[in-house]
Length: 596
View 1 (spheres, one colour):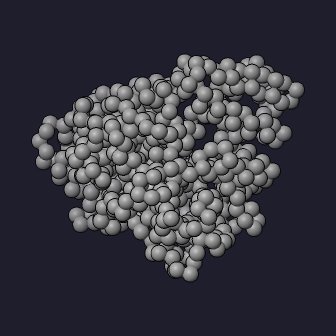
View 2 (cartoon, helix red, strand yellow; view 1 turned 180 degrees about the horizontal axis):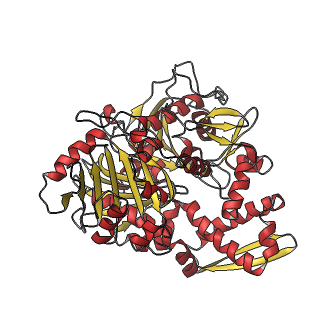
View 3 (cartoon, helix red, strand yellow; view 1 turned 180 degrees about the vertical axis):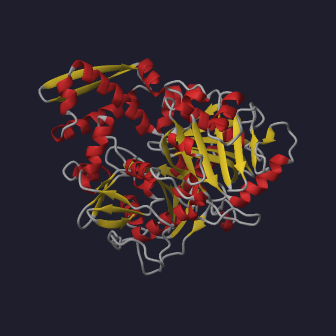
């Protein structure tokens, strides 16, 4: 019988679904214990392993452990044991595992179609890595790509009580283990959706919440049993830390259903049991959830959706199960959840592509189809071995000027993560963050050495330095971190800086210790010029030119608190939201964008 395989490759976990027949879509179990497969990969000397096997091997040899391959897609490659490994081949190991599980359930009969999901904000560069991974993994049949929010929207729209008709506006809040993605969509007909606006935070997810609990545990142990707390930071405490990590994750999940959860720490002759109540948990994660709600509010604002204009806010991703998340998001619109939020994207993708539908014309890059494999290549043949060769010039993998290759140097990543957080919560994003910090140590040249913005230039930012070269130095110095945050709808690389409340800028705008304020910036010469003109001519009272040469303009949005600042002389665009209009103008004045 013909069938379809859909794979939702996530930052922390991967889910899959298969469609059998015209209307039967089911979640595909990927392990003996559940539907989710950890997305981590262990790169060994001769082969790669995935999931729980990867975690097991990493306990003995952490040098080859890649925690979150999806977060490395922009980098393109990673150095493991002094050799560069293409990220596409690491992702292929995960896809190959899923594909093998699926084949066993279908008597080695290859699927008629395979569909892979991806974040809405991924550009053609990231999509090419996913396509390369599919090719390396040896997926059979025709392989298509669909964005995660479109897949989720399709799944929800097919439920009997969804009542989504043409013109309906919905939002998808995808709160996974490692990232948060928000998209606002409008139904173009009963099958398809147009994305009005999408945004994301690549450093906010379930692991961020785990980290908040871990810091709480660390604080209690430091007060009650300092020797145990110190021992957990030593190599001898590694296995206990891993057990503790698992207990923290389970406690977080239990607190969605129970008023309290216990965390037991045993080692070095000590045995401690800590009780965490739901109220305490919600206080611990309040900064992260506020950050998530602010992001969602900003995406809704940018899409032009006001209060009451949203039919439903659909929640996906395991972290969306938390009751506190539901209560806070209720501020934005009616909340709707259906089935297991970890698997709705995969099930939506399976139903969508199996129905023979396409999201948009191929030029929109929302659904892309790879060439069908030769007829002689059957699924029963063993998948090709893992590739340890980075893509060459003829490969479809992305290339970037000054591309940063991430490194795993022996156990150094583990040691750095332990020193920074008290427990092992390191991901490859940590390596990227340290590289970013080093990059900002020297003052960059004007325009980052790129062509200047002119009346007809069309340059868009491709690297971290393309953006930070244009940002006011005071903003960079006042930020606790500045990291890649995705791509604009026009394909420009965006940088997000988190303002440190203890910095002079943070104090100037009245931030308190646990406040969150982020600034997103990118370069897009053509977009900056066109939007400068649009804002200048809008006459809505929310816009003003703030430079003597008439090149800088600020728009405060309809409510006065969502700021867009444009410098058309450099192609720089800056966006952020604040609690008040005065706070936003103070920020722009302090960093020198607007006159005092």
